[in-house]
Image (cartoon, rainbow, N blue to C red; front, side, top):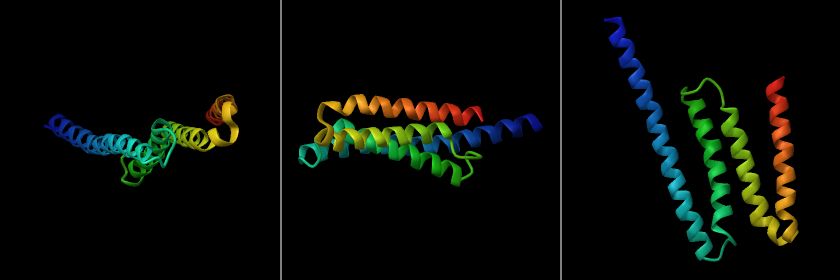
Length: 125
C-alpha cells in the first residue's frame, strides 16, 4: 500500500511541474509573436534578437517561479546562466548593431567565452 501512495505522490509532483512547463512554453510562443509584431511595427531591427532577449527573461522568471513555489530547492544555475547570456545577446545585437556595426558578433563571442569561464570557475569552487 505504501508503494502505491509513493507512486501517487510522484505523479502529483510530475503534474505540478508540467503545469509550470506549459506556462514556460506558452510564454515562449507569446515571445515569438511579440517579437515579430515589434519588428513589423519597426520598433526593433530584428525579431530574432528580440526573441532571444525575451527568452532569456522567461528563463530567469521560470527559475524564480520554480524556486519560489518550492518546485526546486534552489535557483537553477543553468537556467540563470543561459537566461543572462540570452538577455545579453539580445540586447547586444539589438542595440550593439547600431553602435558596433560589424564588430558586434566577435565582441559577443568574447563575452560568451568570458561568461563560460566564470561559470565553470564558480562550479569548481
